[in-house]
Length: 223
Image 1 (cartoon, rainbow, N blue to C red):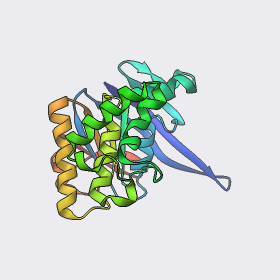
Image 2 (image 1 turned 90 degrees about the horizontal axis):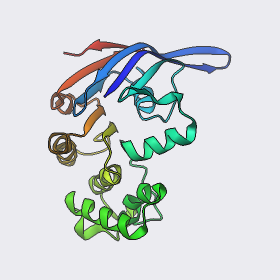
Image 3 (image 1 turned 60 degrees about the vertical axis):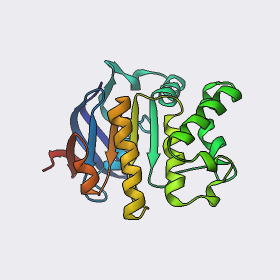
């Protein structure tokens, strides 16, 4: 489903080149679950941003379903990102002025879905993640775990093929983090959504079907 070939990313700061990713080769099959591990600064988040088309590689390519998505114009890439990829970040990026239902509806409204259809879908997803009684609560009125469940529902509202999660349990206590892990693992197993998780949590990583490490911008087999 996803293939990276000789993919590199270089940033320039104060006239100096910083090689963050160096010639990565990686294949991720449809329905796979992959954990990406490594120390801070290893390039994990940069990799997720490229997988999610939030950033472009400096060299190499990324094929999704056999197509190099970075050959497209930006408008088409944005449409692809909206319809195909769901994101769950460590900092959930919920909009504080909107309630849980409105936050989950947002990607659907951006795609052009009618407010009625978007609300119905968002309501069903929030109920599925156990927030039936929190629809009208704003993020500041929710616990950290509840906020992250809203973020997961938002990631699912466009029925994506891929979910990218960057440290999804990093700000949560152990018990709450385990509940978020269970939701993500269940989504992969029951809906066959391709799941890529960046994490320092080795227990969560062990629940993925595959694990890789990043070190000095290169992939290594993680044991």
